[in-house]
Image (cartoon, rainbow, N blue to C red; front, top):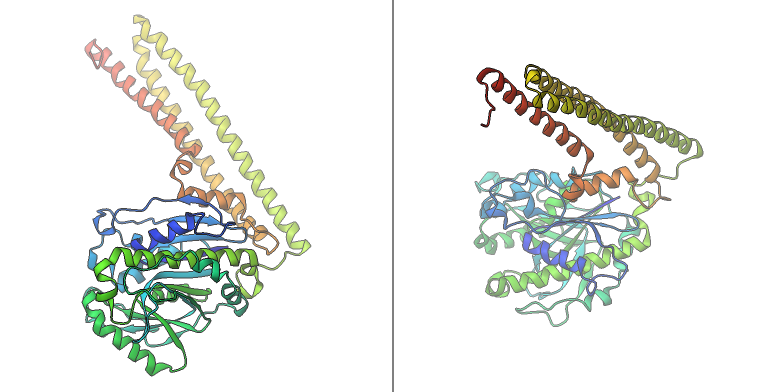
Length: 473
């Protein structure tokens, strides 16, 4: 099962990942990631768009896989202004959700402001499930961000099951707080972790100029209070709501690291922006990693109430899945063996052709057969390349069938891991050495290199016949 941990900015994602890799910060039973990506260059300095984004890391827990994503990395090559565009964020967030199967839980993470005046939670973290978004520039009045959603102006709750959220509430808060870093400016006297099923994250949408927040944040709070007077706002930022909309009917939780008092960004963050935001994001990462550990040990993400894990297979269904896997494996094995056999035949045949070419090359009376031997070598390369392509396509068909069967077999609550084919695909997406070690690259490289050699020899042999000299003499 996929659990998505989606962090807003690159300078928030780095501290969160640092926590999830640090044995002094994370719980002792936390896994090391299967795939780990280095941070990308500052997004607006990237010239080529990130058209095929992958997670920063994938942590294989016992009962789920947690993928760490950064929204900033989806917006590579955009300007600084466009990096803050709600419209751009919303349009690119689907890349995360289409990366794999439907997630069983989505966790939105980022730094935030306190939602109301008179509150100092700087250095603390708030956790909740509901969001409220206010369109700060209606009717597309901000040309850099003209997002319009029907969800604006509504309290959007999460379908997260109560039993699942109770596990989050029972996480080891004391151990997490012991690992918090204090923020630099105006820290609260006693940092806390506020976890509530009814907690609400307020979202100020379509703002791209930070100077506008002083006015627009007030309007967001006012708009929220006209909709409800009973729900409790616990953070104010820009992106949790956008992630919530993309989550659709998936369980959703937000984690906000509070870094400034309401309307006090200039006092609490601006003078020491890196220090304040890094500490806030670090503390949010602490909560995330301890939350994931608690969910893993509880096994609640395999609960049938989530609607994402299948019930136990019946005997008939299990026999059917086993038969499908056996059939698919037989097809896969047949074409894999045929592929290797054809490659071996290619080496034998091409060795004979090369030996004939070398013999004719040394004998001046046989120069006339050189072009024919070179052309034969080219034809052999082409024929075996086409055969290899067909065998590889047949392997893909068997691959798909095996992966479908694995999902049926390993998707039940009694299985804790994905099958080998699915895990192989995940590994290939995050590890380029593993991805490019595929046989298809090296076999086809061999065909291409030999064909290139014969093409060069063909041109050289024709040059000898016509001009009585070698091509490169």
